[in-house]
Length: 198
Image (cartoon, rainbow, N blue to C red; front, top):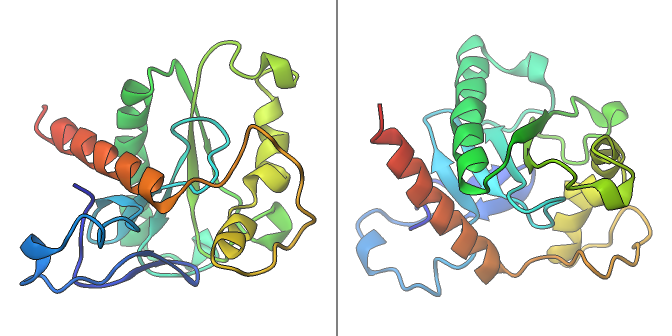
């Protein structure tokens, strides 16, 4: 089951998990859990599913404290963030049967960061997965373009106007809250099984 917390978790200004009273946690209906995107929590970081993944399994890891730049994180936050990236990466690679990963961070608006909150993209990869888009390096253009604009996707989902003109991408649609919650639940179980292994 996706993780519930007594504190709301934000990605920038976007709420990615509900605040749930721990006493009532057991009785929360499945419907109430549907908008949970977070599948892994540490004291200082969280991992969550992506509204419009570039490839299946594309997830994000962020510090719990909302800061725009990596240099603004404390030493402990940096350590926790990258240990979390490493743990989540192992699980994503195994779960999505990937042979490699792209791990990327756009640190600041001029680097393409669309949400002013430090975040790391983890994208599972396989040989020839982007051959139809020009090869494996096509991922960089996808991250820098409309496809990787997480902030615009979240604004669009929440009823705001996207920052860039909408591109007609028949194969890439925003996922429903239910789809993201189901994936978060599956990935939370995978993280639990990883933590029970040596």
